Length: 145
Image (cartoon, helix red, strand yellow):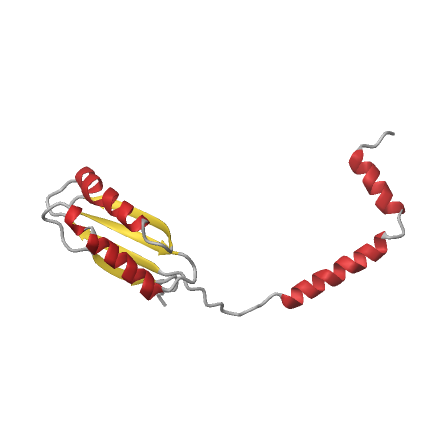
């Protein structure tokens, strides 16, 4: 029976005297790597998140998206340290969830984001509310007993 490339390589390893030595070396490398891997029972992962609420009374969802959500997304995307921006437009307002990179300094990031939003408020339509920015973290999960 004719074997392919994989069969030939397997036959070489089966008949080789180096195979047990390689197995021992790989086992030792794996054990050493396992020893070096840091472990915590409850690791503290800091993922800063901010919610932005903007009200635009009397406007429909299409108008809110065109005049508030899209321009505000562009403004927010200029801020360094932001990983994702999720937005929702509804009648009378918009909500955005801004997720920063893991380990990003929340205070500096929020100040940069707030300053960028306030700098561009003159481009927003008349009648909108000042953006309400609330911070969250990955640990802010409701718990019911």
